[in-house]
Length: 79
Length: 347
Image 1 (cartoon, each protein chain N blue to C red):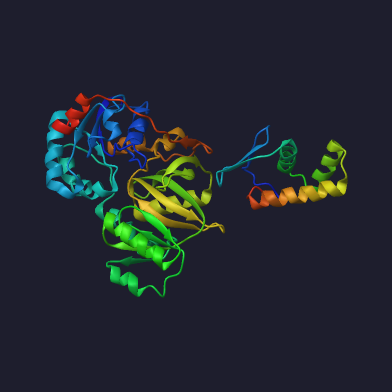
Image 2: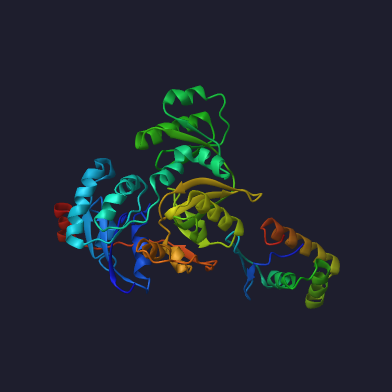
């Protein structure tokens, strides 16, 4: 699961897909996840970073992350 | 080419379903390589572009396309004597046939055009689009051309829904039942006459591509745009430039196989599995053509240069994510101005 290479993300978490013309807003956590995806991090690696960042339960983070990733896939942000 | 060119432009009806003329002029005016004296050619006295004096230097009314080529030529001869026209850019579908017919005569008078020839123009006609797609290997939805109401009645049992009911020149209605088809058929018949086209419905994202061909098979500029806001007439009120190699390749193939000369607009439906269906080919610049200039590929200015014999290299880059948002503006004028154009046919 990789983020499409031409997806643009602003610091504030605004996403633009230049292939479809779609744009989305995410919160700061979403923006962080997308930035990590752009660095070619895997979902388990991102889950680890989120657990460290937010001191959260790993199982819960993984579940939310999966949900967020499938949303990104549905919107053609992820391949 | 740093001289003042005299360029006549039609389609100054910058209304809710706008003609491209005002956008074409705006793009031409922004080109730093030449200056232009713009002559507006109008059909109606209330076309807003007539009154935009910062864009249009002088305007003349011309006869409706239905009046034929002789009366158009006579009027153009008069205008040419007054203005010494160097180039005409017609922008209405319905007038193009006459201008293409007059191309050689205009050229003899010293007036250039940059238009497709009659074969190119007619091959992409709505009535022949399916065959056109088959011939050149493009995906085009299947259609049936109906020349009388009886033909529709006969098809009642075999129609699959939704289906798109289209007029010869304009209008398209998506119908989900036979009743809706019949209603749309009669409405379009009353407005545009026969024939009427029934086209298979294709689900997907609507994309428009502004393309400029050099007439030798090369695409000088290709800008794909997705409509972000669509009016009840199906017109784009806002749109954004896209980065999609499939769309650029499609447009390049279209220009290569048709040897298209001039501007055109491909209306494309991109299906969810990425197949681009050509829904229509408009044989002139679209009303949103200024976006091409804003994105770095000034198509109207490039057309002017090519028409005047200057070589133009194909553009290689444009800005993705450039957005246009159309707006309404109440232009104020005076009865004296209205009187000049409606009484004298000049402003």
